[in-house]
Amino acid sequence: MRIAASVHLTEKDRDWLTKTIKSALTPQRLSERCFVVLLAASGKRNDQIAKKLKITRQKVARWRGRFLQFGRVGIESDEPGRGRKHTYTPETRRLIVRMTTQETPKTATHWSRQTMAKELGVSPSTIGRVWREHGLKPHLARTFKVSNDPRFAEKLEDVIGLYLNAPEHAIVLCCDEKSQVQALDRTQPGLPLKKGRAGTMTHDYVRHGTTTLFAALNVADGKIIGQCQNRHRHQEWLQFLKLIDQQTPPDREVHLILDNYATHKHAAVKKWLAKHPRFHLHFTPTGASWLNMVERFFREVTEKRLRRGVFHSVPDLVSALEEYLAHYNENPTPFVWTAKANDILKKVERARKKLQKVNK
Picture 1 (cartoon, rainbow, N blue to C red):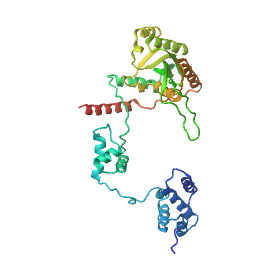
Picture 2: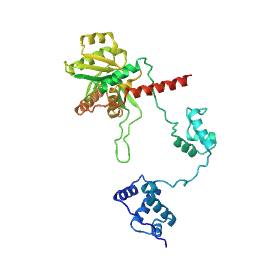
Picture 3: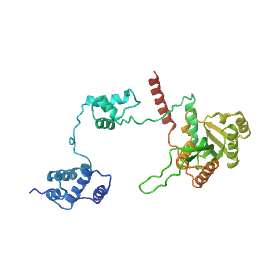
Picture 4: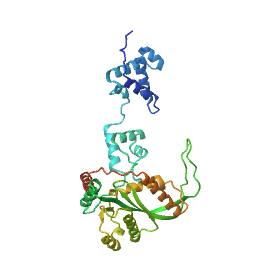
C-alpha cells in the first residue's frame, strides 16, 4: 500500500481548522475537508479516514494533497475546472444582462427572476446566477439629488473648510430643524421582546400632534443645543438663536452652518444678526442638506428614540426628546468629516454629465 505524505500543522492552521468545523456558517463540504486534514495530521491513513468519514479514499487523497500543496487556500475552494458547467450560452448571459439594464417588463417597473425566466425560457436560478455574477440587483433602487446651485463649489469648500480647519477661538455649530415630529400612539399595546420572538407593535397609529426640534451640533465636541417648539417660523428661529447666544461664551465668534430655508434669511433675522456681529452664517448648497452634519444627529434621534416610540401627547413627545438630549450631552461623540471637497466635486461633475446624457 502506498504511504501518503505526512501532514504537519502549525498552531495557527490547527486553530483555523477547528474553528471552521465548529462554525454553524461553514458549508458541509468545507467542514468535511477540514476533518480530512485534521485526521491526516493525527497520523491516519487515507483508507482509515475514508472509512471514518464514509467517503472515498480518492477524495481523501485529493484534499490531503491539496492542503499539502496550497495550505488552507487549497481546501477553501474547488479545483479549477471542477463543478457543474454552465448550461446556458454566453449569448444568453449577455441577453440577460442587456434586458436587465436596458429594458423593463410591459406591466412592471423592474424585472424579477421569475418574470425574466418566463420571458427568456430559462430557469429562475439561471437568472439569479447571472445577476450575482454581474452584481445586478433590479429589486433595489437608491435615491439621489444632484445640486444645481451655481455656487455649489464655493459653498461646499466653505462648509468643509469649517469642518476640517475651524477658525481659532471660534465655535462652529451645524444648525437645522427637524420639523413635523409626530407624537404617534399605537392603537394596541405591543408585545415585548423575548427569546425566539421580536418585539411587536401595531401597524396603525393615532396622531396626537407635532413638534419641531431645533438643534445645533457643536462640531468640536459633539454637544447639542436643542429646543422643541410648536411651530417652524422665523419667530421660533429667532428664539433658538437667542438660546444659542445664551449658551455660548460671549467672547467667542459663532459660525452657523445652515440650509437655504427662507426662515433663516428673514428680514427680522437679519436685523437681529446685525446687532450680534459675532454670529456668522454659512449656507449649504441648494439641495445638499447632507452636507450639514446635524442631519447625522437627527438620524440618531429617529433610530434610537422616535421610530419605535409610543407617545400619548405632544408634551410626552417633547419630554422624551429633552430627556434624550440631556442623556446624549452627558457623553457626546463628535462626528468626524472625512470626505475631501475635491472628491465630492468630481463625483458631482460625473453625476451631472450622466444626467445630461440621459436628458438628451
